[in-house]
Image (cartoon, rainbow, N blue to C red; front, side, top):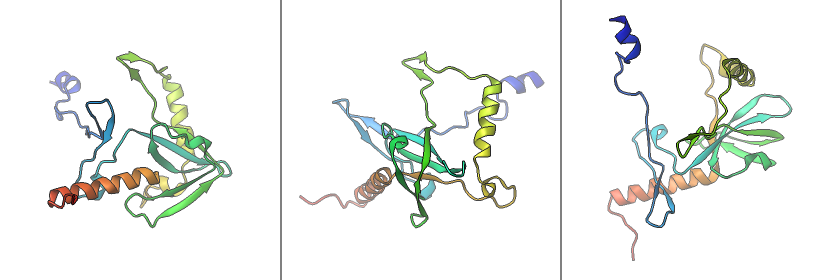
Amino acid sequence: GVGTKLITAYDQPALGAVYKIVAIEDETGHMRNTIKLSSNAEKVSTPGKKQVWRITSREKGKSEGDYITYDGVDVASMTEIKMFHPTYTYIKKTVRNFDAVPLLVDIFKAGKLVYNLPSLTEIKAYARKEFDKLWDEYKRVLNPQHYPVDLARDIWQDKMDLIDKMRKEALGEGEEE
């Protein structure tokens, strides 16, 4: 009945999520980046452990986009970043005088909750504040612009190198000795 439909995910019994491996730990404990390929360029995974940064113009108070780096890179201490679309690399801009806020935070570590859960009021206020940072062209209902989510150059280059390596392996074009 209605109760069953409410509590059991009746119309979607499988979890609607995707999990893709981005690094594999070798015998020595070193993490080796890996990638999953797809015929659709936007579905190709991005290798390595990452951090996503919200880049906001200090002058305008508006978001310039999100910038993906390897974990451990401190974008907040940089004075300039070169952002470019990971698929259409000719779409690029240099950003200066910005604030960078990391978006990925640990919730659990070693099975323990390490995050202070915000109240619903705090979540609503945060969502409103972030929404207000968006330019109108991203918020319009009809034909909105795509919000920029760009890769740092080193991640993009590693991704291209892995794609090329896997393509060569698939075609039997391994490295010559």
